[in-house]
Image 1 (cartoon, one colour):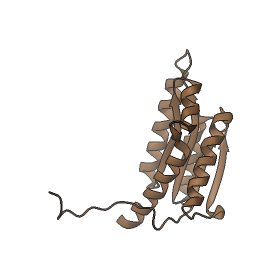
Image 2 (cartoon, helix red, strand yellow):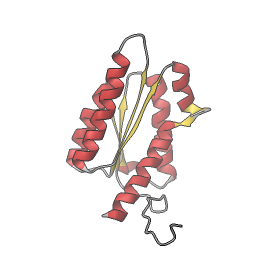
Image 3 (cartoon, rainbow, N blue to C red):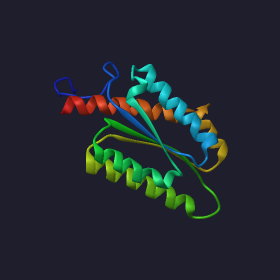
Length: 158
C-alpha cells in the first residue's frame, strides 16, 4: 500500500514552455513525419508556434552538438531530438546510434534541461516507417509528449 507516499509526476494540464526540436536532415523523407507529429502534439497541448523552434542539422550524429549548445544557452524548457538511423551492413549504425544517445544524455545531465531522444534506431526502412506515423504510432508525437511532461515535472520539483 502506497497511500501515504508523496508522488510527484508531470502532467499535461498546464502545458507551457519553450521547446526546441533538433532535426536531422539525413533520411528526411522519414524524419519529416516525426517533425510533423511533434509539432502537432505540442500545438494540441496549447504550445504556441512562437514557443517552438526547429533547428536542422545534417544527420543524427550532429544532433548532440546542437542540443548541447541550445541547452547551455538556457533559452528552452525542453529539447526534442529527432532523426532516423537505419542499420546497414557496416558498424556505422552502432557508432552513430550510440554516440548520439550518449551525447544527449551528457547534455541533459550537464545542463539540467529535459532532452527527449526521438532518434529512431531501426533495422529496416519499414520499421522506421512504422514508427513515423503508421501502425506503431508517431514517435515524434510521443517525444513531444515526453517533453511536455518533463517540463511540468521540472517545474513541480523546482
